[in-house]
Length: 218
Ligand SMILES: Nc1ncnc2c1ncn2[C@@H]1O[C@H](COP(=O)(O)OP(=O)(O)O)[C@@H](O)[C@H]1O
Ligand SMILES: Cc1cn([C@H]2C[C@H](O)[C@@H](COP(=O)(O)O)O2)c(=O)[nH]c1=O
Image 1: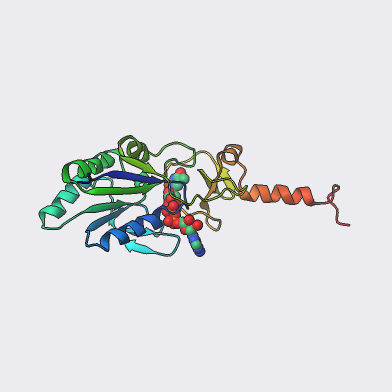
Image 2 (image 1 turned 90 degrees about the horizontal axis):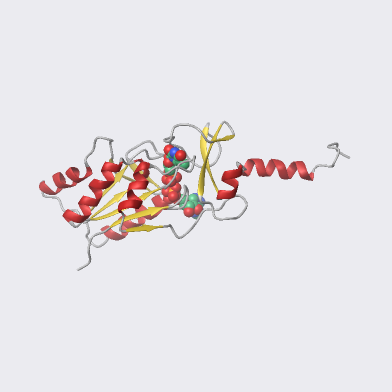
């Protein structure tokens, strides 16, 4: 018999994690398997799992005080059936909550699929992601990697505040990729994350280089 497992799907922002979470939920539920979806700090602002590809579904909000093991047990004791959990934005879960998820797998035989980014804009691991790497049966990268402006696979998340890439600030800052808002994110390769060269800086540098050498128009 197949053993239940704790799986961590991790990649940078915009790598299709929420899309995959929704696809897995859809695929599992198609065969009468019953699942519970959990999420926290979704970009939509609600208790939802939201994919940039346009899909969005309701989820249970993971408050900091929520004991995920007890939550599952209480749903089962009310007569519900649970075959799997889908846990999005798992980087924001507390490490204790990841331990509770491991217990759901081991003691209740329920599959737990987690999705989240590994590291923050400073390249430091989120505590929840660190615990997932420590406990997961498998750590899986999404099949499609987003690209840095230079064409290399993007592996790191940069935070942009008022147009500037920053390296200090609160670890949690819910936001989206792409410009438009005061705080947003851009995915970069390690080299350009380390050098602090965003797409905007690269475009500005390139256009300066293509101006006539004395800077005047002919
Ligand atoms: N208009 C679009 N057409 C096709 N794919 C898109 C479109 N917009 C976004 N995507 C893809 O959706 C994925 C981002 O999905 P999402 O699940 O929101 O990512 P994550 O949860 O990892 O931040 C990326 O692979 C991106 O290329
Ligand atoms: C790098 C980084 C990201 N966040 C936030 C920004 C988004 O709300 C989520 C990631 O969502 P996605 O579905 O993977 O795009 O995390 C943050 O709070 N702190 C960070 O350092």
